[in-house]
Length: 246
Image (cartoon, rainbow, N blue to C red; front, side):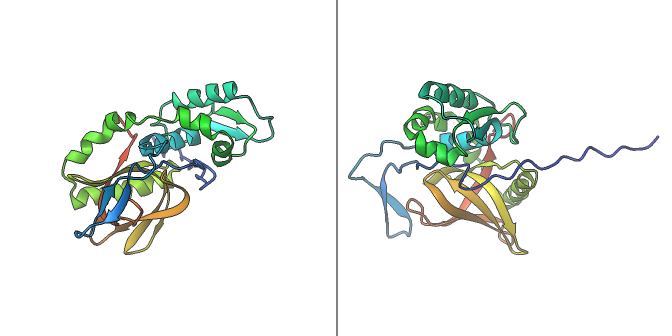
């Protein structure tokens, strides 16, 4: 009696940036200025943002739309009621599924999410607006526990494996108990060298900007790039919307 090899699992279709992201941004609640400690500190903005605190909701939605929706520009554009029904149906599905399913919901009249969110911005902002969801996301508990270098090394390998399988991960980036960064992004590609791994990610705050998070193999540490809200430097990273506890 022979041993049968497990069936080969073909990778899911590659995520295309920026075509599969939102064209609009998650707005920052505050402005940021450098302090004497080298970190950025919040200062009041002159104009209150209208669409804010949605990095979790937007990263989750990008995953859901990638997996559960299909755009068809050959079909005529629909009315607002139809688009609302279809996007709400997509948003009601399981965000822990990681590769496109057979029964994807068709979004007519647009070639991709980026174009759709340009044409239907107000509608999408209304549907993908879940600020409280960021506080109750089930994986939040993980940030309060210690992160070892071994755990972060394992996470880097895990993210690479997910990308190799065509299952781009949603990643929570923190420095808890420091609160200078508490952010969620969508990782869609990676490039490796013997010394480091560069993870390409979609940041809802910067819709069409190509960004990279570096993983240092020797230090076993993730490094987040400098931005308007973070001075850049070492962070802790872990995958969310993955499994029973995350």
